[in-house]
Image 1 (cartoon, rainbow, N blue to C red):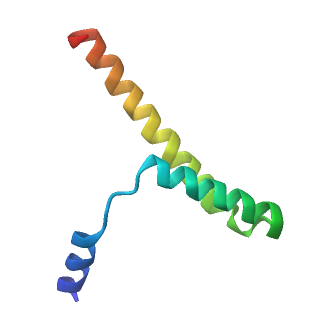
Image 2 (image 1 turned 180 degrees about the vertical axis):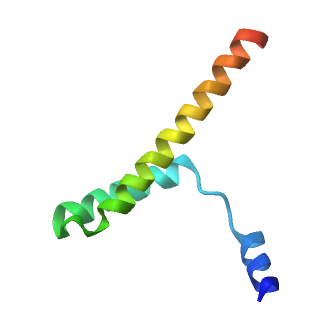
Image 3 (image 1 turned 90 degrees about the vertical axis):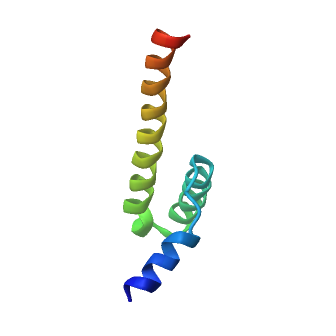
Length: 68
């Protein structure tokens, strides 16, 4: 079983910010039309997107201070 999990992980591509934004758009449409059942997932994706953007900004600010 461990072997099959390793194979799955090896074949997965990283989730991009664009992927998350697309997911948020789809979830917004679903929530608007079908109710709040998907709301926890929407919030989770929003937090993940903000976390990634904040991390990039923090790295950029340090790079421009020292190397820009």
